[in-house]
Length: 413
Image 1 (cartoon, rainbow, N blue to C red):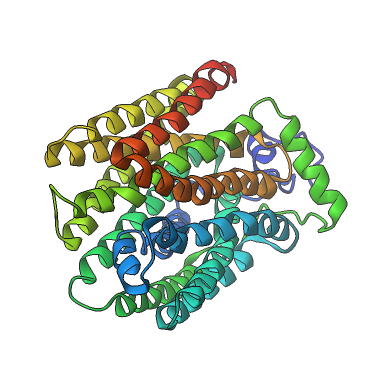
Image 2: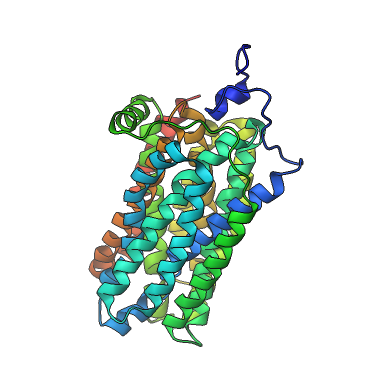
């Protein structure tokens, strides 16, 4: 260990105080395979989570269940993912980053293959829950790995690239299942997605470099509680956790029930077209990386709230009757969401000075809890007042997020 004061880069990493150990830098050897592995991990995570979203109406017919019950195929996965984050984050602080992420991706792929073969609805839900629990091992750790191993100068843009993997994965999961189910049974669709995820897991294991700036933290109740306590005493972190709940809750609710709206009269579009709606995710692949780069120059606190406003504008446009307007509204909404999520997730890594794995876990716990709770509650608003009810519910979530972002987080450095 160097006897000299630690550099900002070392303090940023939260790992060993060793200036001789280089960070991974953009444009230098090691950066490309690192980001490709993390991009694929994010891609696989969102493919596996959201591949059921566009086929919820088909699951309703196949198992004779209503929209809210069908949404459980997503909600149980995101709910168990949220719970798992509270466990896998501290585990990664103790045993290491890469091993936890690798096991997570392999297990999630295998459980997805088993879910495709389940003959009854309860069996499908159990396997979907196990998929979510497994994926918590990647979601809890990837952002921490980035903050530890990437040079501080490139964390913003690197986090944006990682989040863009989420965007493309979410798009691909919806697109593959939404289009394919028009041609093959839904079980075959989910099975093919499971095979894709298995291949991604093997590539991830091969390409991701081991951690060089990781210092083990004892895995015991005292260290876990102390880590959580530190984060909730911070002026900004609890509000960032709440933002994750509100933004993701609104985002998933929109995508959960837009399919029911478009499949019904007067639109009556095909299932394949509903799947193609996920192409809007491409806007997120750009906005997440762009917003991260912009934040590195201007500061997150100055621009974060603007992307929440963009989500509200997109939501308002979806209230219009023309199909083209609905599609444009979804595009604007999606662009704003991924930009805001990229900024908030990177912000958590910068504010957390210790137990970074737990900080990421708490952020993502809130993120996926919002997906599970709000995504299911949206079904009640759909049955009560159709799309107007769903949009009103989403607007309430976003207005609260805007108040927090504009009145409190904007004042943070």
